[in-house]
Length: 80
Image (cartoon, rainbow, N blue to C red; front, top):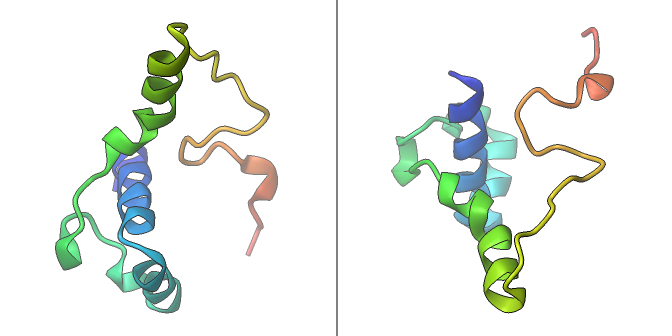
């Protein structure tokens, strides 16, 4: 699975509601693109930017301390 597929599928799991999120935590095999009715949810990543721009008329400077990109938190990885 590519980093983008992983990211978009994570967004889809979250969008599917808490129950599905908890099922995936218990059974990671459910975490597959297009499985169990999931679709990639890339568009969700742009919702805050779009909402901010519509409300303020300005582009949102989304530079943050943490990145939502897959594999970006190498400090949080373990050697297990």
